[in-house]
Picture (cartoon, helix red, strand yellow):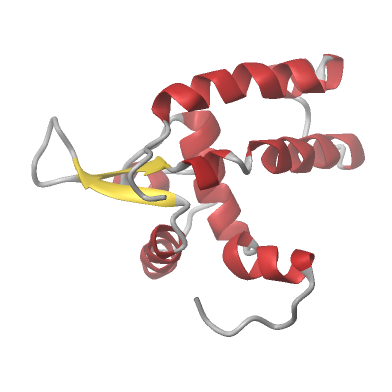
Amino acid sequence: MEKMRSDCPISCSLDVFGDKWSLLIIRDIMLREKVSYSEFLQSEEKIATNILVNRLNVLEAEKILIKEVSEKNKSKFVYSLTQKGADLLPIIIEIMDWGAKYNENCPRKELGKKIKADKAGAIEELSKELKKKVRKKAI
């Protein structure tokens, strides 16, 4: 990783995953079951190809994601979360909840409604699902 801006834990965390594209990639893997480069490109936020490549490389270098050859298509790579990446779930949920609470243009969809009704329960349920998918070899 590049030199940190400071030794503040918030700053150190943002140095790793703090840009919007990294968080959206993590969201897509974590909550939308996207796993491939082409699937990430299809997200509604329309990430540029060069930015996507850069962010995937950074997230892989930081051991948040693992890149592997697809079992179904040997010419394709797929990405999965490591435990380090899966540990971001509560942060992603808090950001979603905050965004829905304070932005009327971001209505709560099914998951958002579950979070509003029982945030701890939603996090626990999602954590169990992620645990089944987490790749352990990167850590």
